[in-house]
Length: 534
Image (cartoon, rainbow, N blue to C red):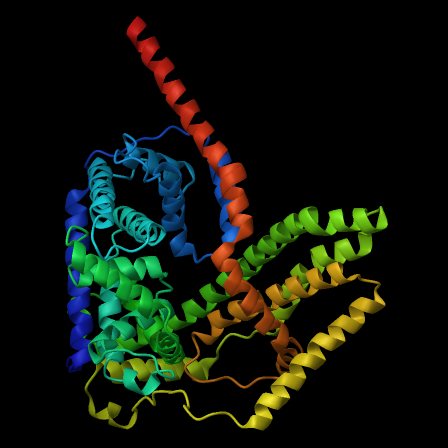
């Protein structure tokens, strides 16, 4: 029988994290059988269909959807003009999320609803206290902080984040030994050395867990045990978070973590997600663990391929919805005003070409191969086990060069940008596009190019060994890099404004959710009257 392998310090950290998760799971099983909330199916189909539409317009990560839906609920139901909250707010939130299929019916414990009610009241009360403090931020910023925490902590009450939190701590222990934040400070950004570990923590969440700033804010407050009632520390720390979130240095460290994150992503899937490859007791069985990890990598490739296909569909729906609204609001009115008729050909090209483009462009994507799988297994082997065989492995941590690129490269990039856009404008003119139609086409082609690029990152995130590009991919990069850049700028600004989402929230969501609630309350009232007659 093979003797257990000696664990490295990181391996011991993994063992401790797994012990914490197993202990939590055991406590959850003991809590099974507690009373849960049952919700009628009234409005279920309509609510679910709307949420599918709303989520397509935002194009957010799947694991953030419940939190975003909770945030919209709080924004609709808390005005901050009164110090009194709407009665049964937590119960109404649970009903809405269940009807939209974010939560399974009969699974939310009544104690969970009480917990959400308590934290909502606590944060609402803290808002008014903080508002009176001499260093209080502007009202809009304070509302932002409050909604961040309300939505995240409500989501955490429904789905306790024990796995991602333990993974973040495990990953931090690993990257803290590999990343010197001082080497990545951009220009003259002022970052105190005592904040370097927070920078790495933020980078891990952004790169590996795909957390948004609201999640990171909440987790950091918990990590440093800062309560909303601790007014001065709460204000100072949140302002500090806002500053860190905006720094280019944090973005650079995030790219370093992401570039060196393939084996950590597999570690998360293998040990921190549901159905881990091992329990705490068998973590030292090196041969068994590495074999199981290799199998999990192959499964991850298949799941990523399926997720990629799903992402393509979501991106196409997002483009079609957005383009339809732009067409109704801009393109069709312009055609009628200038030409007294609707120009069908440009309208149809603008509607369908970006969607077709994103579908075709993803055909050049290829999943990693066996060489990459071996590199990941070797890196994990070196990370976890202190053996003689691992002395020669030594994973080479990939850093970014801090030297400036040659001027000729920047000139070539500029030429490529002009040529790419120029060729496209020339083709549009040949098709008799006017300036509005041409602008809309480039807008949506750039958005499609960026969405396609972002989808391709799902594959790159699993690559520990850079794969060679084929000639088709090189041509694609030459032609579409300018449009990816434009799409990135559009996406960055769109994410801040997201006109489509705001239109849906105002015109559809507010009256829809209000009507469903009134119908539900009226039905409950009538049922109560019937029971009184018995």
